[in-house]
Length: 150
Length: 150
DNA sequence: TATTGTTATACTCTATAACTATA
DNA sequence: TATAGTTATAGAGTATAACAATA
Image 1 (cartoon, each protein chain N blue to C red):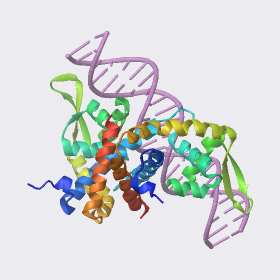
Image 2 (image 1 turned 90 degrees about the vertical axis):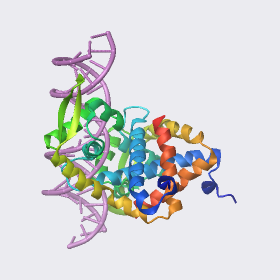
Image 3 (image 1 turned 120 degrees about the vertical axis):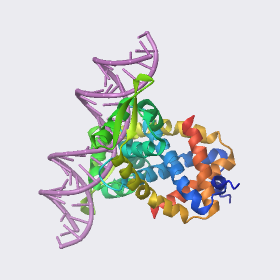
Image 4 (image 1 turned 60 degrees about the vertical axis):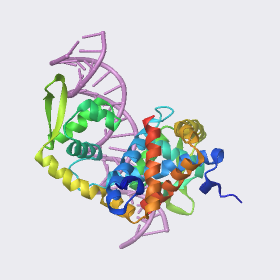
């Protein structure tokens, strides 16, 4: 008998693979969301903070597009950052309609704390894999990233 | 120069790989959540419905463990199914403490509608890949699934 | 007019705490 | 006592609609 799953036959395997991807992605995402250093910020707000800390000031539209959410949704995630004193809004000097979000020193501190903690769990497991297995995951991320980008 | 990303070097690549996995998983998850046939049910409730329709009656505890959420959270997802007439609660004949969730004929119909629609987008993209690429994704899902299960 | 961003409002999802019922 | 499940309550995340300000 053919082992259609491991050989990846075109028609028969595609449906099953969808389920496998859904399960793996769902479980990982939920795990990510629960891996936070403290309760100061939720996952979405923390993700924005980490991005701002790494990439410098960004406009709201850019942040919302990156996260794949509506501008109004991002505005509220940003509200949680500003309410906590982790970020500030400033007008864009070249275009008065735009707002530039920047991280405060306190936001930088929180970002540093969470960056290491947030990824520690997954990083440890990935480091335990051998080079070949990590390469498989790297290539799969690239393939799946190409799909979501399309 | 070495192409460290594609070769997956042990130490240097682990941190970057975490970011790649986070990005790919986050983007896919948000895409999944937005791919619903209609507004009758949210993603979590729909996921339970599809599972029940496929696997038959299950207890609440089993459903909560499968989804990786608290029993109280699952009870409320189930409430949305029963409120919409898509599932019913019944006592377990062998243990009065347990509740068995079952799908109604209407729930079965909604499940059938959503199952095809929900997966259509990803399935089309996966089918467009060649056998080798699909195999990479299959193996990556298995590897990542092993990590979340641990 | 088009773009950028905000607030108002409502819904889903999830968690913890407190409770009931059964084993 | 321990297990299975529920309700109450609260917070995060998201969306749409309506709005203001700037280009």
